[in-house]
Image 1 (tube, rainbow, N blue to C red):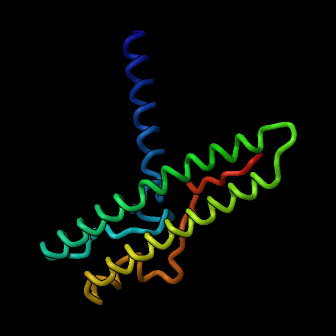
Image 2: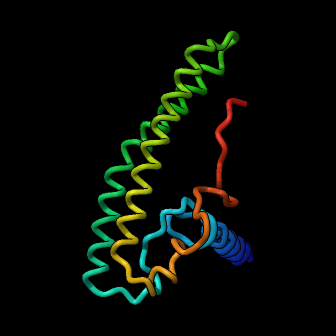
Length: 151
């Protein structure tokens, strides 16, 4: 009886966990709110050539943006350290914030270039069926947007 209860509990945990992971916008190219750089070609009836082009663009995008994202993680950690002292140093904090802002701008430029390159691959009919067609496609205004604050 104990084994059956354990199996039922394990099954329940697996099912609820998988549902939590499937929440809209939890990925870069999922549906719903996310990071806004969806160029995955889902339901667009892509030609084989378009699929190859989009895959190359996505690979290049990931390769270009990953070092900057890693650097941003490091900068956030450094900023937390600067804030977590008895007497935070204003100049150092502002300099770190400036670094993060500049890095965020670089990431945004890479993302914009990627989006425009993806648009150039698609036909007008395909474009109408993408998230690119949504007015004001912005970054990260969904339920999984995490704000990093010093508090």
